[in-house]
Each structure stands twice: as structure tokens, then as C-alpha cells.
Length: 514
Image 1: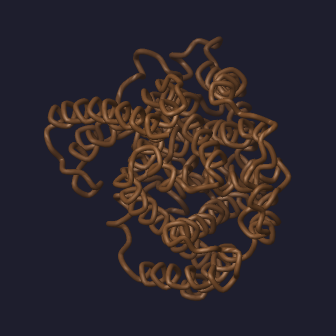
Image 2: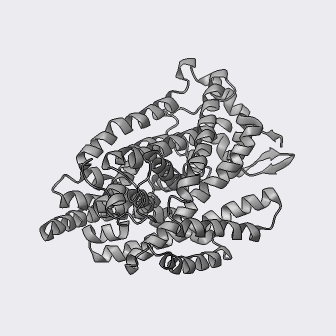
Image 3: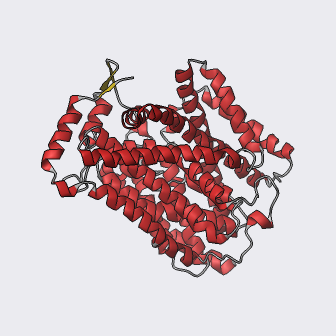
């Protein structure tokens, strides 16, 4: 397929080349990658020591080993599984959509990933380890009260079901279009795989095939990143730089897509995502030693931030800057003589084919299909475990695993027949709502242990502001009430401060009760 870029992209590229001094090449991109890596070694180590990871403690993988969900695994496998569990299409599609807001997305990816997302994932994993491999609803109930436990069960169950269903229909649609086979057939095939991955011991399928899937995703990201640098050096494209002039909302519809808070919802997996807290306990049950918590939980999130940074930069560079990207999304580009509006999936396909050649076409298909599947299977597995914890059902007998899994998959299959786009509009806000609750739980945990809580309570306060203001300000199709922005900002600040006070009080109460 021959891809023809639209004229505006070339004009933007030539204008950027003329306006930008030679020595300014790649400053924002390179600095962002360096900061993300440095964040792992500096702030990640600080978080690890502050929490008090102890290499002498026995982990649930050994203390509760059952050969099904509690299973000691090689650390590199645990890292790869964690990375694929949390990645999915988030750091690719979300980053491309976030790039429509311009270089400001870089700030959110870097700062959010280091100080929020990686901290969130690390605490979710470590709190699970310290509580016998428990899932987040039980941990939240312990530190924030039984009422919050019930709310968390509902939020987590809805989010996991929504993610699982979406990551069935998405790959099924794509594979059906590529193979010309009936979508129904692929739905059955993907559901069959998900069912096996949900009920079989974690090392039988997930632990076996994930390393290969992880290699495909990383190869795609590294390949695109390398061509991004090469293209910038030879002048075939230009990387957007973060400057005072470019720090603005580039979105084609800024009135309905206000940067604060919309950007922080669109780019979730590359910065912070509540879905990750449903995945970290899976690996908390397989981690051999607490000394590996930083590379697995904090490190996987940093790796995801790097992937998001690559794709946000690639999207802007390929289409000639944020303005060109927005025009591609609204006016479209010529593909085989047909004017086609660019979606994240189309953008990935165009970039991979253009920069990576025929091999890139194969990688693009693998990436776009594999990424959601490697999150969909563990979403259903997490949902099984969440329900099992709620029902206090021992999951070692395969019959009990099947008993819980069958109703889940029947409901999921029914949802695949529905128009799920309306439900999915609420997934983004649900994702960040869950992340804020997990951070509040982590803050209460620190208070309970007699430690300063600001490492978690400050990100929780900010994210609460984002969620409340988004719900009040976002347009109706995006799951919001579309009220005056000032109402959203004031209500967001008030709710964030109120929850900060609530968290401190709950944390102190749980400490007294201990």
C-alpha cells in the first residue's frame, strides 16, 4: 500500500526546518528519555527505600504457593508480563491522541510517569505483597474503610470487564479485516484463548508466550524510536520541541477538549493508569523477592513511559507537527487515492510501513493485535481473582475457577454484541478515578505505618482534581456534564482538598485500630 502524506505536513516540516536552529535538534525528546531513565535510578530508588522493601521477607509467591496464581517465577519473566499487562494499546494509541494537544504531552508523560504512575504501580504491587497478595479492593477496605472496599469492587469489576470486552472486539475487527474471515469466528477464537489464560496456572500460557509478545512490542518501539532519530538527523522529518511558544493547546477542538483536565485523561497508560493496580497484584503473587519490586513495578512503568514518549513524538514528527497531526485527524490524508481520516490505528500503520518497510507492516499488525490481547487476557484473570476474593472462594481447584469464569465470559460475550462505544467513553475517567483511589489508599497506608504520606497524597490530590473537573467539564459524548470550566475547576479543588483531609483522618484511625 502506497501512503501519500498530505501537503500541509510537508509545509509544516519545511517551516520548522527553517525556523529551528540546527543545535536544537531532539532536545526535548532526548531530555525526556534521559529524565525517565534517571527517574528510575534516582526517584525509584528513593521510593523503594522509603517504602522499606525488605529482601529478607518471604513473599506470597512462596508463603502461599498454590501452583495456579501464587507461583514463583523468574524476575525477567515477571517484568515482561507486568510490562505487557499494563501496556496494551495505552502507551501507543493514548500517546498519539495526546500528541494532538501538542508538546505539552511530553510534560505529562515525564512528570506523571516518574512521580505518579510508577509510584502508583510500585505501591499497588508492594501493598499487595505485604497483604498476602491481596487485590486492591481488599487493601483499600483495610486502610480506607469497608465502604470504600465496596466502591472499589464495583469500579474494578466494571473497568476490568470493559477493558476485557474492548480488547476482544478490537483485535477481532482488525484480524477479520486482514484475513477476510467472519468476525464471529475470531471472537470465538479470542474468547477461547482468554478463557484458557484465565483458568490455567499463570506459568502455563501467560508465562510461556508473553516473552515473545514483549519482544515484538519492544522491537516495534525501538525501531520507531531509532528511525525517529535518524529521520530528524537527515532532515526527513522534524521533532516537535517544547518551548514557551509551543506550550499551548493544539487540539483541533480546544473548546471541547480543554487541556486541563482532558490531556490527563487521554494520556493515561503513559503517565498513570488505575488499570495497572489491577495487574500489579498478579505479579505480586509471583515475585520471588521484594528487592525486585522496583525493577518490576516501578521499572515497567518507566518502560511504558518511554514507549509513550516515542509514539507521541513519532505522531507529531510524521505528520509535520501537532498542527499537521490534527489536520490529518480532521481533514484526512490520501491513502491509495482515498481521503481517509487518521485514527491512532491508521497512524501506527502509516508510521511503521513508512519508516520500517515491509518488516514494519508485519510488526504493526503484531503490535496492534498483540498489545490489546496481552491486556485483555489478564483483565479477565484479574476479574476472576477479584470476584473470588469477594466471595472468599479458594481458586486452587480448577472447578471453582471455571465456576467463576464461565459467567464472566457469558456476560462479556453478550456485551460484545452491544454498542460498546458509549460504555467505553467512561473507561478513561474510570481508569483515572481508580488510580486516584489507589493513591489515596497508599497515602493511608503510609500514615498507618507512621510515615509521611505526601509521596502519594500529593499525586492523589492532583488526580482527584483532574477526575472531578473532567466529569463536570467534558462534553457529553466523552462522559462529562459539559458545565462551565470555572465550576469544574472550583469543584475539583474542593473535592481534592476534602479527600486529602479524609485520607489523613482514615489513615490515623486505622493506625489507632492496629
